[in-house]
Amino acid sequence: MKKKHIAMFISSLNKGGSERVLVNLAEYFYSIGYRVTIVTQYRLENEFSVSEGISRVLSEITPEEMGRGRISNFLRRFSKLRRIWKQEKPDLILSFIGKNNMMALLTSRFLGIPVVVSVRGEPGEEYYSGGLRLAARLLFPLADGMVLQTEESAGFFPPAVQKKAVILKNSLNPAFLREPYQGEREKRIVAVGRIDANKNHEMIIRAFAEIAHSYPDFELTIYGEGELRRFLTGLAGELGLENRIHLPGSVSDVAEAIYRASVFVLSSYSEGMPNTLIEAMALGLPAIATDCPCGGPRELIRDGFNGFLIRPGSRQELADTLRKLLDDPRLAGEIGRNAAGIREELCPDVINRTWKEYLERIMQGSV
Image (cartoon, rainbow, N blue to C red; front, side, top):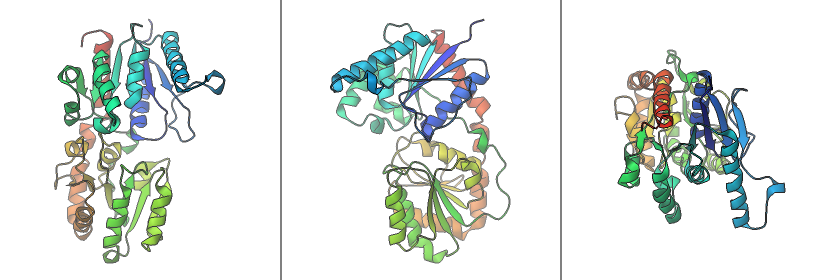
């Protein structure tokens, strides 16, 4: 019997939230007997690994394939990706993020391959220019299916596109399926994510600086790589906290790195469904998150019950909420225990099954 074949399309497997979701899905479908091909534009150094049985194809044109001028090279990229779909002949294409969704739709036209596009973040950020927004509104009706992260994000699209959309959650990374830490927690506040402007780690550093004198035993650790890492390291020095604020870069085992921490902070201006917040809550960490568009943190956190929500960019609210948790270990413990309940809701078996059922309906033409 011929194996069902799913092709997944994304820019790279660089270590980020969307890439992790795609890799988790690839591993799941491969484990249940599907043929899985991951198509990426690039291969980078700091990438997630995948099982040997999962194929990897690169769609970016090589230096030898390049022509003269942007239009010429765009057409060559377009033709190469279309050739990949013709050669691989997948039963379905699942694309992730921004322009990739548009390229998947355009390059697969009239090949008879159903395409599901997945918007991973806040749509207004993912399609940030007038041209991209127009293209999304024109092209997304061509998709056979569309996956969104939150109900709020659907409002970005016209009604004809909204009808195609489903909300599919991110499954919890199995590495975070462990019992919450029961011992005395380390005096550390932690954050995890790309070190860029949207993640707004500067706010965490400045809020920590505001309370640091009151909690001299506490440190702040921000895990991740990005263009602002050097700037934030310098800022910690300017604030006289270079020995208490650490930016060690990416780590291979995030679960172990944050497992015993006292508080987790998500400080983004915008998020889809933030994996790092899900994972911290699953470990039983009391979490503080910005109530940012497109509503992912709000769908995970009941304010004051299993975490705290603050306004994006509000350093004072963050500092005040950190004080509340650090001053009251009983409250912090209760919030963390309640947060750990997310493990049942986002259990990989449950979430992966919903993805499978949806994608199979698309392949069967029943959606």
